[in-house]
Length: 65
Image (cartoon, rainbow, N blue to C red; front, top):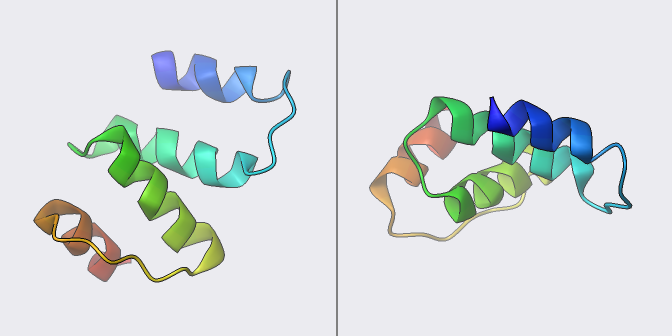
């Protein structure tokens, strides 16, 4: 899958938020969310940042975790 290729690519480049991006890519694989919403979910998941959004799918995913 494309997301697995991109995760492998992150090992080759300098990335300050690799863990967030890996979480976002894995979330994007499984859930029907826009990639930007997956990145927001990644920040919430990895750094416990509160996310303000009106996106119902993203809110549901955040509240499940």
